[in-house]
Image: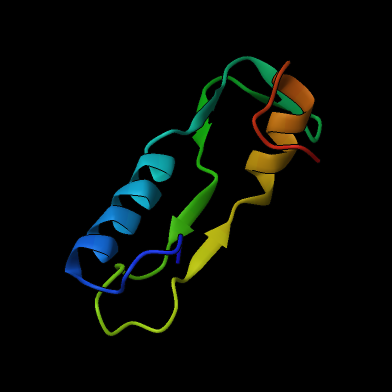
Length: 82
């Protein structure tokens, strides 16, 4: 992945990248979504379902569709293109 050799250092690097993304939620304050007023709630892009580790064959993530929808509706310049 990313053209890196498969070793402890590259696994740690990829885990750090994923954790950085996980630590950047989007906050919704006083917005109406699905006819419900959200006074304060945060949404993450995805959830890591198991730790990234050596010997693991896959990285299991769950994408939060609410995050994508909220970003599309409320963010002026989203990083993600839809």
